[in-house]
Length: 269
Image (cartoon, rainbow, N blue to C red; front, side, top):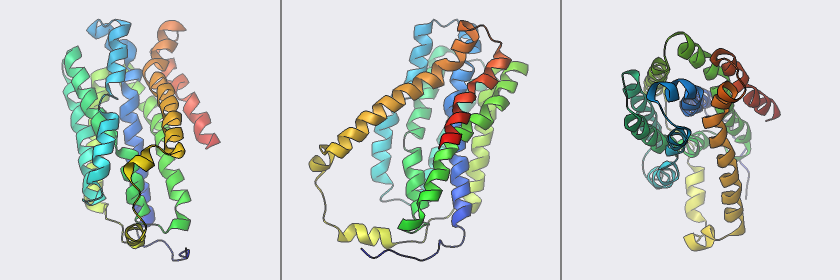
């Protein structure tokens, strides 16, 4: 295969930065329930089992949505798919601004999970349309860092809102930030101009899905992802409540402690 040496098209790094912010918002949306776990359980009088269900409900449609949207994004411009996903995230936050029941909170988290399931893969698909093969490592790493920085930046800000105002307003703030990204993407977002990847994909022999899904590489990736998301979902849901209720720290201190694993993770990556 002949490696391309063409430079990234004009605007490629602007798109990369916008998609970095996309992933930042994505993980801020994920972390808010765990961050506000103790106030939520106190106000709604939830048992630990109910709060655990609330945390896991985010993933009910997460994988299914990722698969379905994965097929859709091959037929529709990623620009519009990303816009729709971010709009779903924002709209799923606003019902929590007012008085809510456990059922409402549960449904909104399920909807949010369905919107966030395809997020990273679609963002990578979008950014790859802006960079030739040999130049994709750095933009991919930048997108990946959006998750860590989403927690590092969002947790202190959201925790300040929770401590000084209400956990309801923390959800509302995320909804507003999500809509701000939607507007920015609508104005600045573009579909990547590189088409050689599509041409190469059409020229390569088609691999049956059964062969792909039963390959050792795919099975190994699934096993690794299963373990990674088990740890991730546990940490996102229970880390802050454990610090407050289990270790006796205040909600204010817990916000700063909660970002430490993500700081170390960002430095390591």
